[in-house]
Image (cartoon, rainbow, N blue to C red; front, side, top):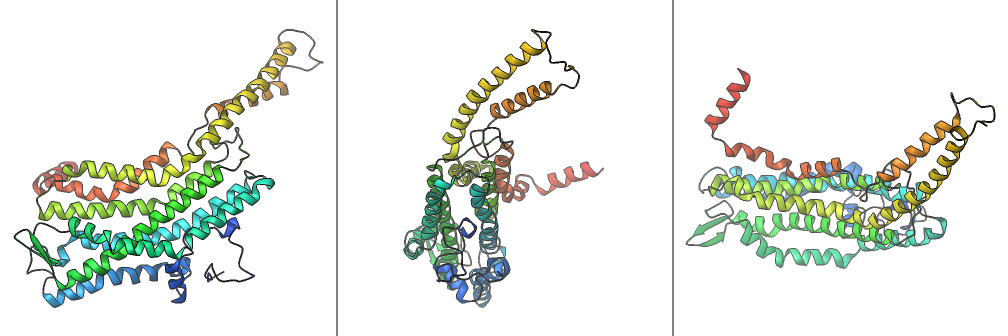
Length: 404
């Protein structure tokens, strides 16, 4: 369909919430209903408009108010147009947080459907699987949950904003005098509109990740028909790794937010990038934990399937190998069959390949390459800040040395 109806509306043509093809962490909740009423409910069609609207609300009034007060390029130690953190937060981070909704919506739905398409859920267990989907969609559509996030933003979030984002000098949003800061006119919009919006977007993503983790945990309680010889080396659960890739824009948004924060401290508070190594490492670890930890609930299932596969295929391979040796090595009676091109040898090789696949099963449904790509997605916003570790003259000398 070209236009998604609100998932809570009763429509006989709309698939039930328990349908795996209807699973979505995005298409639900009060904010989604608001987008729908504004005729922006189709995320695949209206993603650019959503980005422009949210970035415009967060950033454009600040530009206009700073122009009114004369703090765009002068008048304070940190004028608006030179405030790197602000532009990164409200132009780049907000865009990535909204864009991530499209990627997650498109990929997670297909991932959930594969539990049924691959036959991992038996017909007897399908009601429990549908109950898990229905419960996840109920959490997604919860009005109290989003109201609670808003209350959190305008209570605890205010203290985080005032204690974290204020520089030790006068800026376009706050004047600093004798250890105390006073908000300017654009500063009120900055602290009471722009920052609450991005904080709400971040908290809502954490809530969605909680829903995803809870759903996977419920599915892991269902008996799964795993396949030890599946070539993905995860007993058929390797497709779950696609969920981690889907959250890459979210990790990049988190990294960009911290990178903007550090950039301001480097240029205006004489800080150095190396002083923030613990924070960068902590952020990378936190990002990996967010997207990979929910997948570990299937580790006991995978390890149990591996042990069973090694035992059963080991016994079967032993029986076949014993018969093979008896026929081709211990007796001359080969039923008139020639050793050259005998199917027994190919079957023996097939058993060896199947047993090797079982031995190489990974306990986690993600690979090392995925691990490294998620780390890169988190730290890529910090790469431009590496230039601050060298003087302009040193960079120019190195550039000349590389060219000539």
